[in-house]
Structure formats: C-alpha cells, structure tokens
Amino acid sequence: MGSLSALGLAYATFGQEPWDLDFLVYNLDDIKKQLDSYTILQDAVSLGIYINTNNFDCQLLYQKSSENILNAFDSLYEMIKYQTIGYYPLLKDNFLQSCNNPELLTESASKHLLEIMLGQTNLLEKKVICKLPQIFYDNDLMGLYKGWRNPLMMTNGYTMQLATLGVSLSSACQILASNDYSKHQEVQDRFKDQMEQSFNSIIDMYTLALNQTMINAKNNIKIEMKNQFKKPLDQLGENIYSTLEEQFSNKMWMVTSYSSSGADIPITFNCTDCFNIYDSNQKQGVFVAAFDTNSQINPQLNNKDWNSELKKSKSISEFVSNSYKNNCIFGMIAIDPTASSYTAGPSDLAFVRSIDNEGTNLQKLKVWTVKDRCPHNEK
Image (cartoon, rainbow, N blue to C red; front, side, top):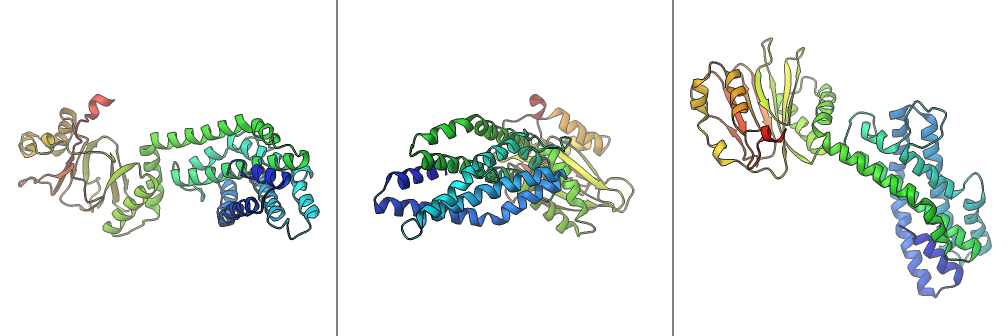
C-alpha cells in the first residue's frame, strides 16, 4: 500500500492525463475492496483486545484510530473517483478534515496504532498491557489459545496495514495542502522508527511462538481436552491432532489417545519434544510427540533388534528408560495391554516404528528415530 495515496494526490493535485486518473482509481478500488472485506476482522480485533485485556481504554483507542483512518480513506477515495463529476472543492474539504479536524487527525490515528503495537500508550489502565503483538501472542481472538501464529500474524498484519495507510493518507493531506509532493517524505520520515520497531515487535513474537511450540502446544491441548469430554478415542485423537496441525504447523505430530479402567496411567514413555496429558477422573488421556517437518528415518536404529533388548530388561519401564538413554532415539512409548488406544497422525511417519513385541506383556510399543539427529548431544 505504501505511498500509493500520496502518489495519487500528487497526480490529482498537479494535473494528470485521463489514463493516469483511471489507473489511480483502479488501484484505489482494489484497496477499498480489500479494506471492506476486513470489516469482520476489524471488529474481531477490537473485541479481542477487550476480551484478552479487559482494558476498555485500549480497545477504544484501537477502535477510534482504525475508524478514523478508514473514514479518511473513504473521503480520499470519493475525492479522486468523483472529482470529474462531483463538486471537487467539497470533496477536497471533506478529505482535508481528516488532516485538520482534532477529532480525526489521520496522522494521530497512525501514531496511536503504532503506540499500541509497541505498548507505548499513555492510558489510565496502565496495569494492563496494551501491546498488540503481546496481546495476541498470549491469547487468540477468543482469549483461549497461546502462541497460535495465525491470529498473531493476522491481527498485527492488519493493524500495520492500517497504520501504513494512515501514514500515506497524512502524506496525501500534506501534498494537497502545500502543492509540494516532497512533503510525503517528511511524513514518512516521522514514522520511520516507529514502523521499524513495530515490525520487529511482530517478528520477535513470531520467533517466540516458534521457540515455545512445545510449551504452548501442551497448554493449548489442556484447554482443548476440556472440549473433548468423553469423546470416543478415535475422535479424541483426530481432534487433538487437527488442533495441533492447525495451531503449530511448524511441526509434524503424532497423537495417541488412550483410556484405562485401572487407577494408574497406562503408558510408559521417554522422549524428546513430547508430553502427556491424563485426566484421572475420566481415566482418559493423550500422548503427543512432535517432529521437525524435514525429519527422515534413521534406518540403523529403526531396524535394531529391540526385542532382544526388551527380553534382557527387568521391566518395561527399565526397557523404555534405557532404550532412550543409551541410543540416539527421539522417543519410545509402551501402552499397557489393558488399555484401549488410538493413534492419529500423518500417514508418512516412516521414522515411527511399531515394535512386534513377540509375546511380551505389552500390546503396543513404538519407537521413533531421526536421521543425523541425537537428542542427547543437542541439550
């Protein structure tokens, strides 16, 4: 979007050929359609701020600033599109109000949005953070899930689009008022540092989301488990897998849902990048393991004679523990024969091997290995 509005006013102010105006209106039509399609997102971001912060001042500042920029764009759009058939002085005056009217001040609106991006707002409710990247890293739009990159990037990307549009509109105002096209550079220079810092803030939160994938995935699945009350194991496993795929697509996932009639957790495991969530009241749980998306099988370890090792062990827990400790495997899980279970995941997890336990007292045993990776050497 950049300085398209500034360029447009340069054409409109200094005189243009008909085809120049047609080209400008065509581009403004595209921007208007895009902005109109974001109406629901605009409302969702505003509501999401309040849901996640309970800070009405922060919500109101975001809402008013966004609306001022959108209204100013509508005035610019009408001035340029209808200048040859409408009353141009009135159209021009309507747009310039967004520069001069203290209630609008497009430049101030952009400044406020960028302050919200950076957490630099001077609000009464100072105890509650009003920093958009942090708000939508800590929670999604509905205040549920943490570290979900889609709402993080969607909300912050849209806000930066609005702030950039506001800067362009301010440039257009300055050009129109002074008949000096170079004024657009002065406006953009005033916002340069804030814009750069805001983009860096988004990148920082995005990077944090990647680095905290396993922590956030576990927290989010704990929340999701409450929505899966007494679901059949196949539905539970597939639903948890779908949630992980949607929220954390930077990893591949294997989900084993299980239930038991006994008092103890019916699985034994040792692994890297994994977690287990068990509801003792419902006697139902999910075991989750994550893999890098470029993972490949370690054929030597995957084809190892694990049964020989198993027969030498005094117990299953000893076997699982020693297998993980003494080999460059990423994980192993054993499921008690009294438990029911279901495994969900992509069909091409070739590096996950189900071990034929040859008459042992376990029904299900899985090991997973990754080529050229040894988790013990990476800690």
